[in-house]
Image 1 (cartoon, rainbow, N blue to C red):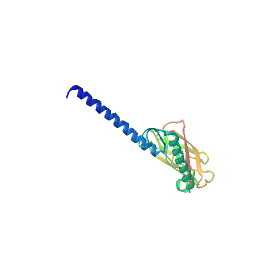
Image 2: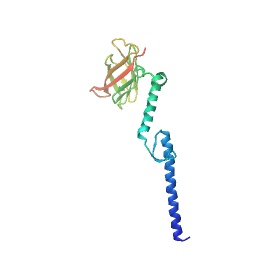
Image 3: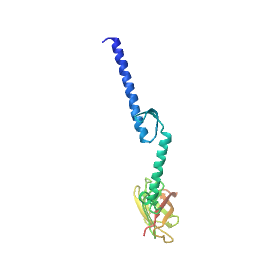
Image 4: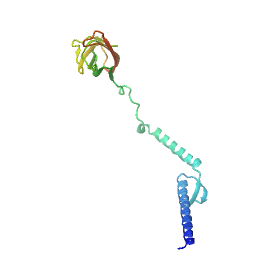
Length: 196
């Protein structure tokens, strides 16, 4: 095959590919314009459409669909909408005591507050007092706490707490490190629902 025939073959192949792409665009355009119910701007009837207007008619179709969806929602509220969550059931309780101590476990009852604290000081300490605002203060009988150990203590409240209520109070713990004479203080906070 000579060079001229080869060039002609390449040119014809290129034209066939271009024609194929144009026809594919036309077929897809006619399909798209019929789906969104718009008219063809440039093309051959409804068979080949090269340019169509999506904005006006397409927007109307979208708006009409949105209106239908809103009507469906308003007619079937019970089916689609759940009630707002109850804030009472969404309550999160927490106990936090600043380092080097920590709050391992806690409980708020109608009689008082039970805190199991963790000694993270790295040495033995003596707990002098634990006070919780909105409740009371205590000096634990067993006040020596070795490094890494826990202390289970009860702070009795001056007035009875009501079961089911939310309790919130600041924790103040005063302690001495083993062999030291200056008292140190750590603060914390407790928020919990009062149990029986």
